Length: 259
Length: 313
Image 1: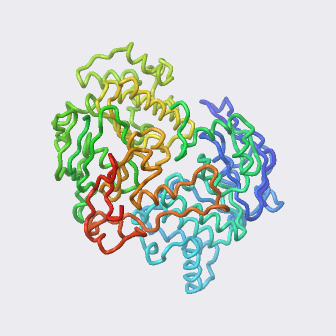
Image 2 (image 1 turned 30 degrees about the horizontal axis):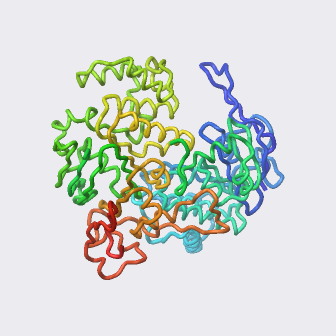
Image 3 (image 1 turned 30 degrees about the vertical axis):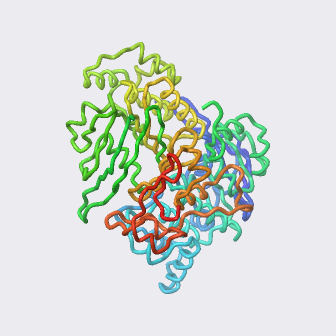
């Protein structure tokens, strides 16, 4: 469904843009329908840059990104966002604090469904909330500060679902959440996957990536160092960088060596 | 005994009443012990860390005593706490990225900080500690802006422990870091204890699997109260409190996959601490709750050094 071919991003840095920095270097991979691909790497590995390019918040310098065979940079933006949406790391800064949180739903209605009757729309919102396992009475008509991080993050996923999207870019969506709610958001993504949603799951936490994804891409300094089925990447990592990352994950029943 | 906390109560003053963020917490930290403090957000971890060093304007010390090395710690009095801060109790704050003065070069900032305590800089010692955390000595001539996140974190760790405090509080210091940097930071902290830079430590995090890498004892808090406290290995393998058990079972480990084993979170949210429920505070979310839970469970020592506050334990 989504296909990246030798995508690169070069930033100009320095006082007068005299130097260049390659953030993403000829990256190619594919995400199919109903598939979760996790993109794993440390800060500065270019994983968020890839997410932003897929969401067209940034343009690529080289290579091509295609969605169902069409080059995304040539698609109409509004039509593209009907199918592809993103959810980001910090749920608190994704909302405008002076408006109620459910304003994200009415904005979708204004832009994409202006002719829909209010009653039908309310039912749609209710069913989207139901899909993300939120209780409408608890979250509607509230300000962002009255809701928890997990609730806000799930509202954003519900907002994406209202558009019947095919593809979701999830950029570190669980890193601000507690361990107890983190797993609920992951289970939700896994359930949506069964309904045909393709997900690009960007994370630095290998345990989470391993939990839900079919395939894994490991990035290091903008390059893909390992790419393959998740089970294979985690059980028999071939690259030394992947092995190093795996060894540094804190695990409950195994102590780190040399600490 | 380095630190002894007896029935500590700290409330937040708000327009709607008092938020009972810490409501009768008692524990000890021995010499050379690392205590890991775990729990969800809003359970009072950070409040506990802050009340041991500096309460902000909204916090009120309502009751309880804190002793450090046998001396009473005047935690309710900002001015009287001054001689203890940095020399006896020190903290590595949650956001080390923004903990340093951006307008000073780091070396000058450290000098000014030590001057304020009437101590002169021992440059050799400072250099030795920079080498230890693998920071180049040049950093003293740089501005915080010029350092990466991991470097700033290590610099703040060196500054916080420079006067060899008895107690070091590390509050969620790794939550913004990558897994490999995280490991390096934890290794350094453990090294600090080995070298005697700090006597004992309270390590606050919501990630039990990380705490277990470092802590000797783990204390799990829930809604301002102690839920369970035991040696790290007992918490991980033989926890008795249902909250601890649920917290541990919601952790995805490397190797666990959705298709094979579906993990579950803890349904519901922690209770509001404006009017906390009577009795056990976990009763609304607890799968084992029964009538007796309306009464408050005392913290009982079920085996040596293993305290649990639950009627079913």
